[in-house]
View 1: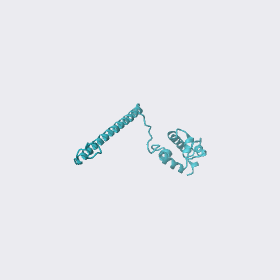
View 2: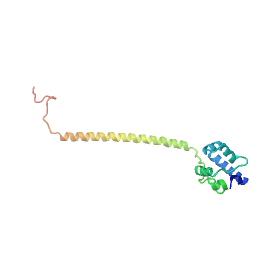
View 3: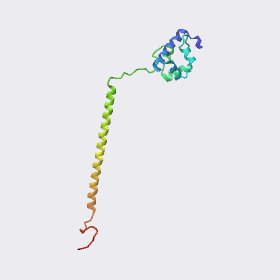
Length: 156
């Protein structure tokens, strides 16, 4: 059935639901909606004018895929207009401040952990040095005491 044969009451109902999509997804801006779908000014005039005509099938398929619009909901008014229910999330008061406090706490804890890690590394290095020094002292054979440094067997 060609577009011009669609009953005006059905076309107006489609226009109303399409305007709801524009309001929900494109801030009520028909021009923004048209740009999003590369729809011409003439097409927008047809869809939203005084004697509306339903959009083309390729456009409807793109709308269904991109904005998750239910074609049953849009064309027939059956069920929900969207395949996934759109919902505006309410922001709890103080949530932003709580989030900031948590980020600051995480930063503080990371710094403490880094300091602790540095301290443990320093301690372990000291332990290894002491251990190497003791091992080296045990491995040396006893030598005769020398006089002044670098003067072997000289007597005065």
